[in-house]
Amino acid sequence: MRPFLPTLTSIAVVALLLPQAACAQLQALTEEAPPPMSAPAMTAQSVNPNSIQPETTLEISAQASVKREPDIAYLSTGVQVERKTAAEAMAAQAEAMSGVFKALEKAGVAKKDMQTSNLSLYPRYDYIEVKDRDGTTRGEQRLAGYTASNQLTVKVRDLDNLGKTMDSLINAGGNTFSGVSFALDDASEAQDEARRKAMTDAVARANLYASAAGLRVLRIVKISEGGGYSPQPMPMMRQAEMAMADASFSTPVAGGEVGYDAYVNVMFELGR
Image (cartoon, rainbow, N blue to C red):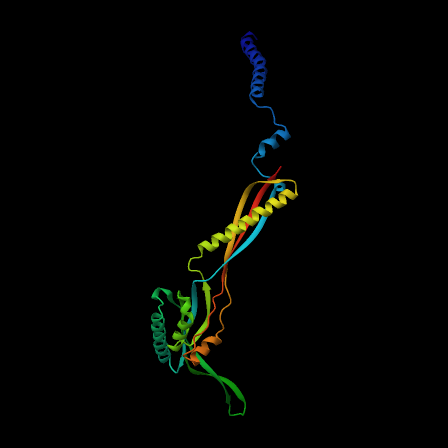
């Protein structure tokens, strides 16, 4: 049995050392790990100190409108003809439109201010009743001809002669007229003034609400805007027909005012 003594002694030594090593490793890990954070501490670190709480904000929507006397007008006019064949219809509208273009150029309208907005050709049908041999009748569609249409959008800068310009293009062959609208050639100044007015109103109302609540406006958090053009009523098409009946009569046109609107949504931060 003596040959086995050294081996048994080695096993006993290893058995005694393993628990000590495990305890030392556990102690080292415990010393290196940071202490666990409490729930309040974790919450405090997750909140951004610069964040704004919903109950401290006020959102205001404001609108302002600025009106100006227009300096340009847009005419929507053109030619529409009916002929037996498609080729005849297109030729007739081309001849009439040539007269319209010449009249506009004579009135001082630049080529860059004239733009074709629609050019179309389509068949025209008549619906008739046909009697069959058995005495019954039925409706039947028959080709009657073709309609060619050429529509033009014209920008007129000389508003003092707008009525005469309308009369000249109608007398030159234009037989469709769907109206006139007015605008500013450069609306940037009017739009900016509307924006300033809307923003001033929003700030004034925010200060009013804050004062009523015993608070004050600290800063603006967010601004968003919208806006647009407010078109005015158009002259009646009946006036153009009167101009055609009497060449000495100039169509009366009143430009009135055009309006430009601005809308702002502003979020304010309130505080003591």
